[in-house]
Length: 309
Image 1 (cartoon, helix red, strand yellow):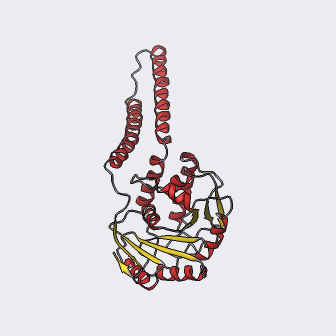
Image 2: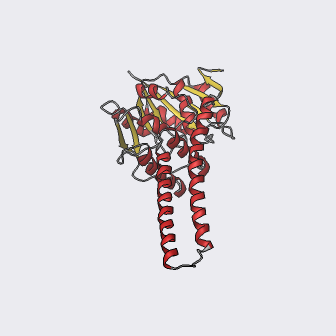
Image 3: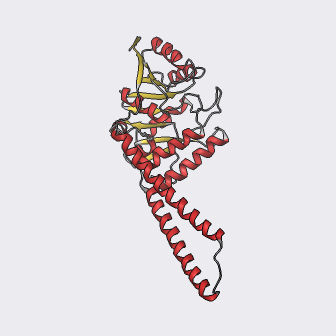
């Protein structure tokens, strides 16, 4: 019988994680599995709840990160402790129902290497849904995600895909980019998305923006190409405007060019240059941080098998 590793990044989920663990146990009755709960430096007593669960059930491993590294880095930490043949990742709030795990596992037992849950109706906030749509659009354009593939935080993958993903050593972790460059055998499984029963989402605009940057600067050079095209466009527009100015000078001698138009051209050129320099600086900064061996995550405590390390 194959062993299943279920990885859940946890943040402020002291109220929900106990219920999620019980539902997983009910769904996987008779299966060999391990449940890896990664506390991403929650400000509440989430790790105390995880510790209590781990001490009562030797199938549960509790990991406590030293500071908040983000959802994808927390999952990465869980990957390093996973020993299963099949890997499942899901949320800690109950919105990704454990009852959907068997369907995801069934999908990767065939041709698919990775199966993502697809929701008919997402029950996130308007802000979170908007962020997901922007992320999906940019993923299609920049990291060549198939348009008909729906990415979600609830997915299952084969062991070899996780092993390939773990070869990535840089600090800017973006799981969809790592998965997409590892295999093209991906599929969706329709699963009902449940409304949130506990707390509220920990995602802010700042965290979403940081996640987008991780994905699109660590796995694509297309933003640099866009900057090149923008530079060519602005330079071409400036050349056309120069020809227009010369023609107007000969047709209307003595005409003084307007201050407003001059300032507009300077602002356009200056803004474009700053945008391109900023984009190059973002790439160089990430190379510098990677060369400094910045950590993907730092583990403070591990609780498993009734022992705390």
